[in-house]
Image (cartoon, rainbow, N blue to C red; front, side, top):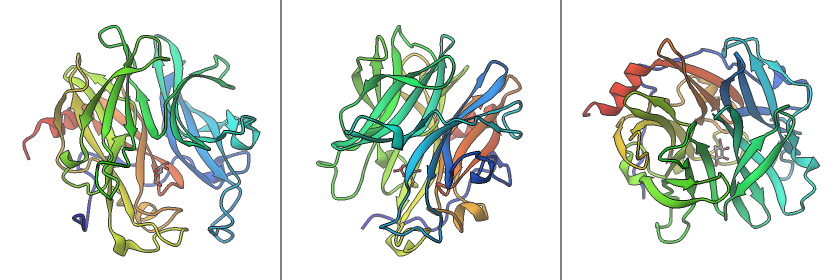
Length: 339
Ligand code: BMA
């Protein structure tokens, strides 16, 4: 029986906005759950690509009557906090996918490399979950898939520049055999000369390295560059069978929090330091006591401002999109302090 962790709290260096920044009520089309967004700065504004699971609500939801589909939508804000304007047309709607093998895309992450925008997406298919790297159109109304992994893999994030002449991504394969009878999924890295062919796979962080996790870890928001190295969040899951009904579904026994670590500037498979405590944990009422899956926070965007403020965008309860801020110096200190 894995160890169970009774309470987790966000780090004192984290300042959460008390209310979500985007919810279903802000969406000009069918929306039920609006969460797990990628966010970057683009052309003087903040550009968000969010996930929208639609077609049911808490009252009509049942294991037989689940969501009709998933759309990926676009929202833009002047300050990255409020005033989000949601574009009338989503980037994609799963019901419009014509390839019978592909069911849906979700959990978009966005990265700008050499001025061009790229998405990483999870893709559910008839033969497993696959991780995708895609180039976003200049008009932001579609994307071209550049690479699709073999199953099962997801939670990919791209580094915002080439390192040692190669593109680099973090990712989370699902090794179902050989790691015991619970999830035990780890965080990996791959490199590519062209964003299409990926190799030089390396383990970055094992689930056993994170003291507050008894289940699985994986990437969260794309890394940001600091003078000390690459600062990056990761998602961290602990499981407790006694949680029982903990959201809309009959059972939901997982809790998702987020960790923070520092990777070597030139060899990002090397972890220079990691906080031994969670950076962000579900601890606001709408994160712990409401929503589709309670006790879930999942970062998908991280922006380092010139002032040293870091904005971390995260989905809460798989239901709404939120933001927290922190000082970059405090985040780096968390990764290097010995405790
Ligand atoms: C993961 C993904 C995420 C989600 C999380 C918690 O497996 O599906 O999109 O936020 O579970 O439900």
